[in-house]
Image (cartoon, rainbow over all chains, first blue to last red; front, side, top):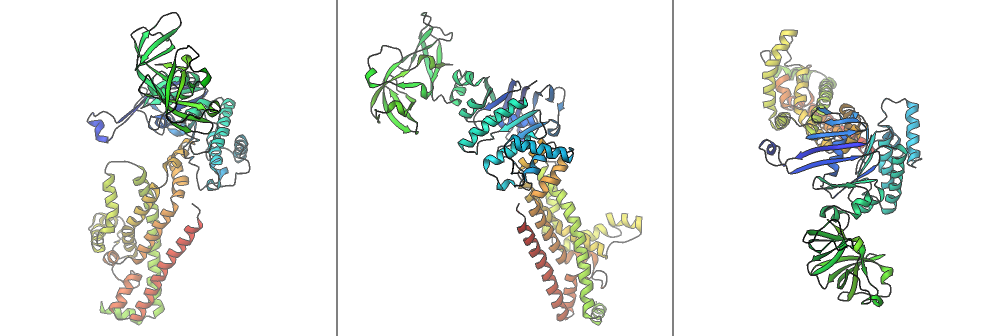
Length: 373
Length: 234
């Protein structure tokens, strides 16, 4: 059960490019497997997420490979299988909802129930209205609905024919924060109740983290990493993934100057900065990249400055700050390093300290939070 | 020709108006029905399908819009005459010549008005967001089903505009009709042809009446359409 995807899709700038053997302008190489769980396809716009969804749904035909959902082959290039969209039994929620504007909510939801008896249809529509808490809206037209309501109707319509898989293309991108949070919860619940694979596209890393059972990270048409949210967010396996999950501080110039001293850590030289990190099998002389999330850079209290003898304590000057309300984003220039570090510090930790541009402070970078890749 | 005018003038006014009005409406309604059906199909294919020679199909269907009506009429005479490609087949089977009949006038009206239908409807179908169609496909609906219940209803303003323009064009058709159907009183003298005849014969009273009726028909069809379209939400 679940979904097995391994296909390629090529895009050419011009049709004639293909004949002339010119390299495709974009190559999507989608490969991942998942069970009956909530899978987030995560990546920037243009990384191939939507194309992947369209190939799975059958709206696009891949150039090679196979797509298997719940042991049913949707597409297999070698066996020349390409099930038409209509026969794939899937629910698809479009980014713009694509609710039929000339039909009321009831007709929209019932549209996929062709061949059902009137009574059955009615019962199913009522079930869907109930499942998504939109009872009372059945006679409204899409134009009369709010964004969140449209989203719920789109979900109801997609789920009504009892699909084998649910595909959601950035379903919440146009909704406000509170509606988003509620709907995320609802989708998670629905996935658990129905036990079908749900593929969910987003470029928002908070959304990916909160909703996913499994995250598939796309970058420039290639799957970079597949894993639980924790694996992907705390242990990104390359720079692209690290950037995508919000690791704003990435340094690619580090050399291991000391390893295997029994402490389970390595000492890295990055620029003029000597920094210690947990060892992940590196040896002295190896080159590596490292990164740290902005929220894992601590600004030490004034009283503690100079009193602790730990690694990864640096002196830095504040170059700029942006107040985000509950926290403050600060660009810090480490004295030993010419580059800038981005730190996010909760405002309550800075209560009695008004750090302004040009002020000097002491920072600590947590050894265990440093990610090597 | 002189005899024809004499016949025309000798009949009472009401008859001289009634026949052209009836034959014009008959030709326009029949040609518009055919244009609507063929136009919607051609427009859907042009808007939604990719095929070899699409550009050629597009030009061929638009050509009557830019050709002088005399050229369209001449080509139709060549095609539909007893020795013409289609005309000879028809004559051999039925023994009937289509030229100089109201049916020929209807064909002329069809040919000159189909570009208006296709241009307007193609644009309207292209403007329908494909996601609506894709959504219908993912809900298990086939393409024909989707076209009938999603695409055409969403493009209906454009389709109706095309139908009205085609109707108005058919009502006002003159040049090509005169060439393929002539000006036979009591058989093919449509409104616009009768106006010309009356004007030529100096019967300004008749010409005035026919002009007023023709303007009224065009005005009414436009006004009713606008009212209908405004009552549609989408």
